[in-house]
Length: 79
Image 1 (cartoon, rainbow, N blue to C red):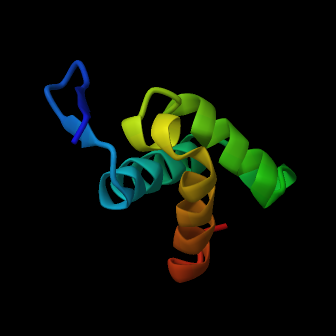
Image 2 (image 1 turned 180 degrees about the vertical axis):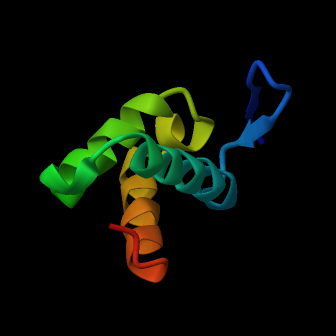
């Protein structure tokens, strides 16, 4: 299983769980730092994907990563 370590020493694995945690964190930080009401969901997802573009799961399975992101948005009622 491939993994990547960031500058903080956190490991990101090429699996949906690791991706979901990274996506959720970036989504929440993005919402708290910006006025995201003007963007639609697709635009926000694309912005977050650019922020985590080096995540192994996003690199290895981009279609599945998008499905996980959409599921997380619905599950957690993220806006």
